[in-house]
Length: 121
Image 1 (spheres, one colour):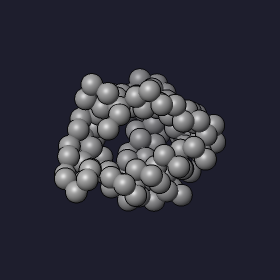
Image 2 (tube, one colour; image 1 turned 180 degrees about the vertical axis):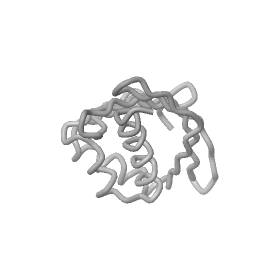
Image 3 (cartoon, one colour; image 1 turned 120 degrees about the vertical axis):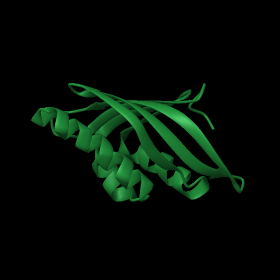
Image 4 (cartoon, rainbow, N blue to C red; image 1 turned 45 degrees about the vertical axis):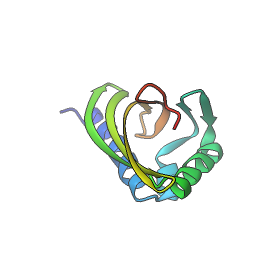
């Protein structure tokens, strides 16, 4: 395993860990200031928009992610994730495909998230 591979893998694993801990500050620190995040038909740009996105998700559905598989090619990562959440009091699980780009500093610059047929809940 190369040093770059390890850096990219760490960036994604740290992202999942801070996401699951609902640690918004650490989560945003792992994202580029101008990160672009696409989910379904929605695009979020920059840490301010991402802070609102993640805060709302933490408050309303309490999501938690589990990495099922991860493929890394230089600065690009493809992950199969299992998301567990609560919607209107009922537990729900969805499989997610996440595609990430990580810069030379180990910071996520972009993501495209697809949930079982759609990224929309």
